[in-house]
Length: 112
Image (cartoon, rainbow, N blue to C red; front, side, top):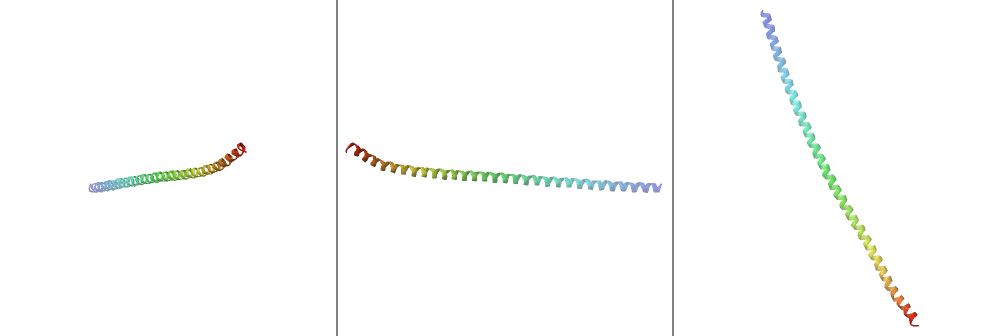
């Protein structure tokens, strides 16, 4: 009987060791899960920050390009207006010169 009690005690000790090992493993698994969740959460936050920065950069670039387009449009518009004004002034001068010559011709025809 003594041997049987000894085996029971040894079995009980082994069972307690197994339970302790299982608790340690469960604890390690829970720690690993928590660590993995923290890593995933951090990665998600970092990805969101990168995405927001990219959006802001794209918006700033779009605004910059739009402003550059407006400035270029204004420059082209001013160039066209300036050329048109120069042409109108040249035509006006030509008309004035031709008017005097035309008046002279009319007077020569009417008053020989």
